[in-house]
Image (cartoon, rainbow, N blue to C red; front, side, top):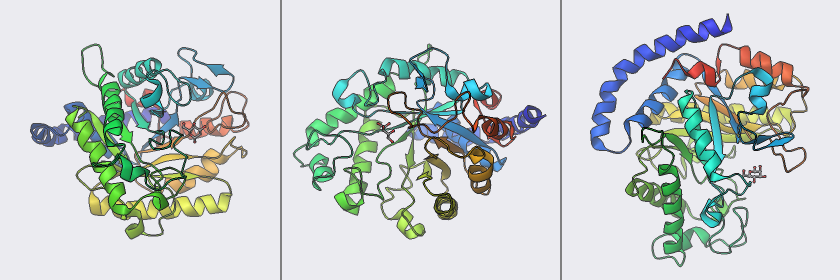
Length: 369
Ligand code: BMA
């Protein structure tokens, strides 16, 4: 019954895609994105029009609770029978190690999973917890407030940083299907910048420098031919209104999707802040014609057996989001997980969330593409 109604809407989406193909042709001639990136944008745009959104999970198919590196495995799939429709991965420290990320996941494996996800009709996104190029420490090293300046043109770390951007571009460009099509993905750099816990955060750089960092990132990746990318802007829940939300917004021409990263610690505070962020984003989304999503969320260890249908759903169902994504199920850190696994107290409620016709998992996407 649930799946049946999802299939009907999928057909409607295919119908509307046909109209949008004309626009794709026009934009394609401007060469700012590949046709595959436009198709991805198109699907992301249609989902909320049909009151549907994708469920997403970070590092979903590469490790989980009690396992690491197994093939064809996912805690989400083990619980509900399907992979998330959106998977996210992180590029952090690939610029240093070259072959793996800060969470010790092989880049070859991620490439394989992103291709598999694309082929099964799903989507992938990338964040980048990039090391601090001035101090050599991690993203969370906020001991110096000249780091952003140092990577901009004229800065002491500019050349080295351009090299890092090139590594990101080369890697993303290497994610191709067997026919040589670059897999379109959503890139979400410089996230949670309205807080001050990353070296690119609010108190660590000026508005002008933050925007310049975005522009330089976009321009370099475009120059390197990474035109298969869509871009997401994702502040935290700090902005109180749309003016604050847009304070460091880098520009309509380089952003495709606006998001929010919001985590639960206290239920009332979470519901209030997520609701508030989504209200602001709905206004911004309309005014700037941008897609919107809950780019990161979750309740660590999910100590509430009805969290999916009684806390998360009642907030997000009110807004036209394209996806909601929960953070990773760490295998190397105790009690750092955000999706259920078999036997978890919220697993039954997650299955109800999965069965809701509005939530999309990978299997629901095949008919949409
Ligand atoms: C954070 C935590 C860290 C992790 C980082 C990048 O929120 O999960 O353990 O290294 O994200 O994935």
